[in-house]
Length: 187
Image (cartoon, rainbow, N blue to C red):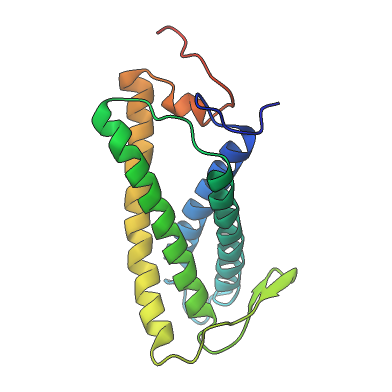
C-alpha cells in the first residue's frame, strides 16, 4: 500500500486528506448558506451554527495536517501544457491560503466574545484573540467573501481536473483517485 507521494502520483494520505477536506469545504459552504437564512423560531437556529463551527475546526485540523504532509512529502510533478504546469501550483497555493483564511476568520467570529469553540463535546478550542473592536463583524465579512472566492477557485480546480481527464486524457484526475502511477486506459 502506497502511503507517500512519488514524482508520478499521490499516496493514500494525500488522497484521503484531499477528499476529506473537499467534502468538508463543500459541506460547510452549503451549511453556511442554509443556516444564515434560518429564523429565530427555526429548530436548527442554534444547532446549525454549532455543527458549522465543529466541522470548521475539524477541517482546519485536516488542512494543517495536509500542509504538514505536503511540506514533508512533496506533490508529484504536474502534467499538462507548460502554462498549466505553472498555473496549477499557483491555484493550489491560493486555494490553501483562502481555505486557511476562511477557517481562521470563522474562528475569530466564534471567539469574538471570548468563549471557546466547542467541537461536538470532544474538546474545546480556546479563544486566543478576542475583544477587538468590531471583530465579529469584520471577521464575518471576511469569512463570507473569502468563502465565495474559495468556492470559485474550487469550481475552477474541479473544471480543470475534468478538462485534464476528458479532453486532454492525461492522468491528472486519476492520480487523485488512486495511488501510485495510474495508467490512462485507451490512450
